[in-house]
Amino acid sequence: MKNSYSNFLKNIFLLIPVLIISCGSPNNQTKENKKSYEDDIQGFWERKGTIQFINEIPVDTLFYADGDINEVENFRNVKVFSNDNIMWLNNAPDNQNAWKGGPGGYGKYKIHSYDSLTEYMSHGTGGMGAWMHYFLDSLKIDKQPFPFTTNLLTNSYWQKGGRLPDNNDNKSYAEYYERMPKSSEKNMLDGVWKRAYEISYVNGIAVDTTSVPSDVVLDVKIMRNGRYMYQVDQTGLFDQSKEEHGGFGGYGQFEYDGKGNLVEYNEFSSGMGTNNFGPKENPQYIKISFYNDDAFLQITKDTLKQSLGGRGLVYKRIK
Image 1: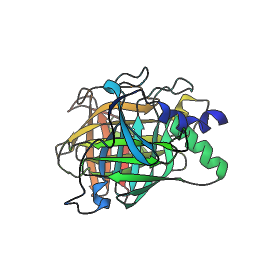
Image 2: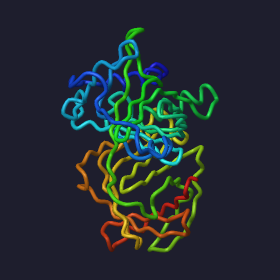
Image 3: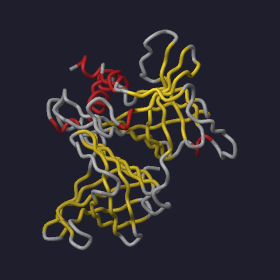
Image 4: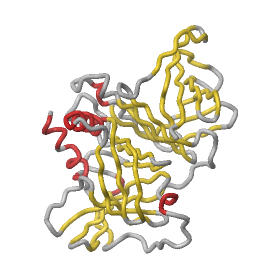
């Protein structure tokens, strides 16, 4: 198990069957008309490939071939930066552990300039969540910094460093991302949220409220401009031999009418989840009730009008 986790990050970055498209950096974008790098990093980004460097000079841009990676059809790797929170996940299946879905990570970040970024990872799902739990517990620390050299442009950026392997002293690789466009304008649900309570219902009546301690289960959701990502780290609750140790997460788009009706369209999952759908193919209907601007209750529904009414989740805003 130790060797499996210690090799995990190396292995996920080696999953790069790619097609050499061009030499050098992919876009000739500039850094003009920008407010600041703190603002410009925020949003959803999708990894499109890898940039190869020799002697610190970019020489080739390697793109995922037709969206596929090994035996993974339509490989996806999405990352979001929002209000000092970082989250990412991908849909590469796990054939070595009890959970079968892809990995994901959550933590905080600090962008120092257009050229420098540090991610402080603390939780995750799938193999990343299991590795982080083992690694942090072994060292008795609560987060692990991953420093990156970056090149942040208007609609793309690359990051180099962290745990990316260098095959030779003069050769290195950078993850290449492109900005995902807004799916909708900002609304009341935009923000970073953490599940604080669960409410049990019987015949539509609340009968019990249970707190959700973060050291046992950490459920964080980021919603921004019509896109969302969430991860539920359960490594503190289940043994590493159990499927539930992998937790679960998901990425997709959402629509909110401002009247309490939310529709989430999951596109792919992590941890125990192995779902893959096209954009807005898989709707989930949710009733939203705001307590105030920084807390809301969500109850999943089977249609726009009928509530399942078995469990409600209370989320509080992470500021």
